Length: 313
Ligand SMILES: C[S@@+](CC[C@H](N)C(=O)[O-])C[C@H]1O[C@@H](n2cnc3c(N)ncnc32)[C@H](O)[C@@H]1O
Image (cartoon, rainbow, N blue to C red; front, side, top):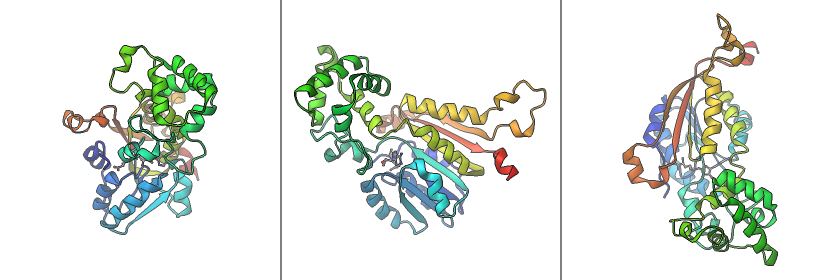
């Protein structure tokens, strides 16, 4: 089962009203969505996920709580168009709980985990165009190096990329354990007795397969444009690069527009459209309960003004 990170903090910070129109961008196993549904008796929940297994599970879980929800199998990058198709122009709350769920990691067949031997896959969306197998067997050495270094923050990225390319010259790399073995042989022995020497490489390849960082900026900006005044957005990040993208956008929209900062009086059009509600990390109690929440950060902002172009139209 999936442990929903910072569940209470998210639910409290969204300031849910009974008639709220709320979006869960990352339904997963329905932890956040269930708690939201309990609070919005006369509202509606729109929940997105790209993983059919998560959707099938959560459909049943949410049906026990009500009928006022719609699950949409789509990448959250398309949230705005999917909502507009359903005639929803504005929403009162949005939550993003980024990354993968525990069942995705733990289910051997999904090929995400360095702990289970399986065919390399790592696609959250089983219809996704590239899998971990494709990344490992077709990307150039320099691309592998960049991905493992940047997305995995792995100091042995150069050796790992080189050894992947050497290994696949003999035969394609088919399984998670073959990749673990290559990673282990790319670093000094003392590093391989660390708990999970392949953790960072697997994380990097997963991020590449699912375009997790490429789509984040556009997805968050799209979501912000759907929020009504007083509406709130909560984003939980798990990776420093992910966190940097969210913090940069939130800083930009909660500050006075750059153009107007030096003016003696800031015209209304340049005033910030959002204000910060909270920026926080899991409590010590939560860290003790769930080690996977150790890198989590929660950022919540609230819309306080409409966008200029919306006022004019
Ligand atoms: C951390 S889990 C969410 C767990 C959920 N909040 C809960 O309490 O059960 C992230 C989920 O988001 C989905 N996901 C990640 N990126 C996505 C994207 N770009 N579009 C749609 N779903 C995505 C994953 O498939 C996964 O099920």
